[in-house]
Length: 337
Image 1 (spheres, rainbow, N blue to C red):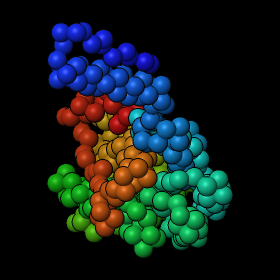
Image 2 (tube, helix red, strand yellow):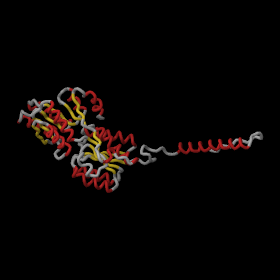
Image 3 (cartoon, one colour):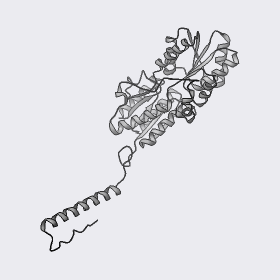
Image 4 (cartoon, rainbow, N blue to C red):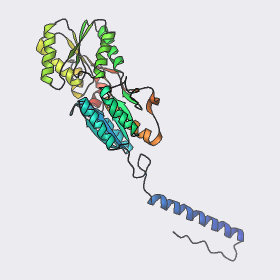
């Protein structure tokens, strides 16, 4: 854009002419800068025009499980906010999950968020990712393994602490014999929860391993155990669907035991509300997914490390009972709890 200098009138002094010329030049520069800004590309949320960060979220969750769908929704919300290109993949089999992480490394993503339910199986793929210069954070499972694995950060609850809190609550309720149901053998998070219950609970605690992929078989196994020992007065489940199966098992066995659980979804909220489940422990899966993706974006764009790389970022535990279930019901129903 050309802005002509004002014409010099015979009556104008040399100083006035110079001032007018300077003012016109300033207008010219401002107009030029404004046009350049308007015509240039708008930076994306990552601060780099047209260059989106690519993140892979790889979990051990079962397909269609409401808990993992909540994790996924949280991750997708963070990705939308940050302008991140997110891919999600899961495999309940440790070898399958490890292969998915290797696939992400081959795809040369910028960051990987991974669950460490079985840390030994994930050690190789995580090492491969780090060697490729890919930032890796952990979530949900592996609070005792993420630092030694070399992950940047971890988001989840301390399962041992959560388990001990449940044990203390069972004592307060006057329970004497707890059955802690583990639906995935070898999952360090589930094992830590039940170990925590046993450590804190003054009564007897025993573990029951069931097949979490077969709800009918799970229900039958819990019912059979309750039928053999009427002294069991508390079932502690490790997931919302396991808890609901245990409610049916209690009914089928004619047992007087109550059910409590770690984790919740909209169906479990209803069970707490109507008294079928005594209480639930919420670790906020939506928040875990959100924070994991957001942390990778922050690290890539600003060099930030959540928790300083030395301490986990805790998302739980929080107890949900009939007295306060309404507070979180709308979030669980929406899948953001």
